Length: 171
Image (cartoon, rainbow, N blue to C red; front, side, top):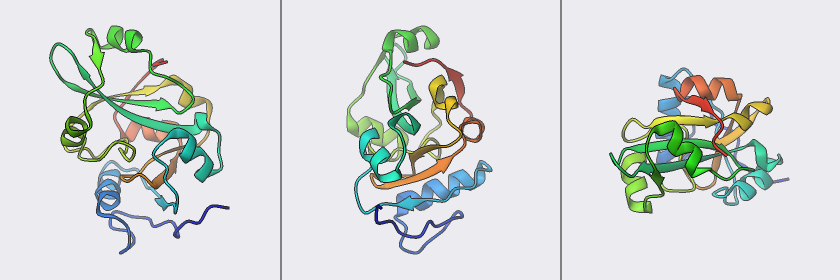
């Protein structure tokens, strides 16, 4: 069984909760999404690491991936099942222009969080958000909560609403 801190709840939960997690918790509360953040002793930056820490299948992990459109340079957040790989051609068709993976510094600037801990909402600037259809085959999924070792469980439909995401096949 993984070593975890007791799950803090609420917008400012837990004095030991990292600042990035508290920022996410405030954003979640503002969006009407109650969260119970679990900070693991081990890293949860990859879908496999997160699945092992959460004791679930890789498909239940929400990968929060920031892409940039090539033409307009706008940031787009893709919430993708951990079992899937983004089909960039499919995403380009949805967005009307090709996409690319930006560098980590650009991602941190627009998201306000480091890669591996990007939550599905609460970003430094508004991000157009799309959610992978395959996540809806689970009653509960686990997403990053602001750091590379913090996650929270959530029902996919609740996440869709709170993140103001659009549902689509992304893989």
